[in-house]
Image (cartoon, rainbow, N blue to C red; front, side, top):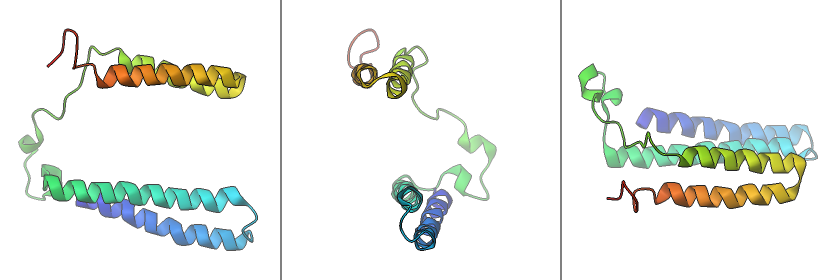
Length: 133
C-alpha cells in the first residue's frame, strides 16, 4: 500500500500550490475554485495518510512485491453479505435525499431519516436475526 499512499500524498501536495496560484490569479475573489482545490488536497492527504498507516500495520501485500506469485493473492478477500437488502435501502434513501434538494427540503429530511435507519440496520445486521454471530 505504500505506492498508493505516496501517490495520494503526492497528488495532495500538488493541489496545495495549484490552489494558491489559482487564488492569486483570481485575486481571491472567486471563492469556489481555490477552496475546492484546497479541499481536494486535504482529501488526498487524508487518504494517503490512512493508506500509509494501514500499510505499516498490515505489511506488504502480494501486489506490493515484485517476486510475488498470482496464487498468493487468492482466497477470501473480505466479508460480504450477498443476501443483504440494506445497501438497496441506503441507496433509495440517498436518492430520496438528493431528490429533496431539487423538490423540497422536507423530502431531504425524509431521506436522511431513512438513511439513518438503513445505516443502523446494515451495521447491526449480524447482531440479531438469522445471521447473528
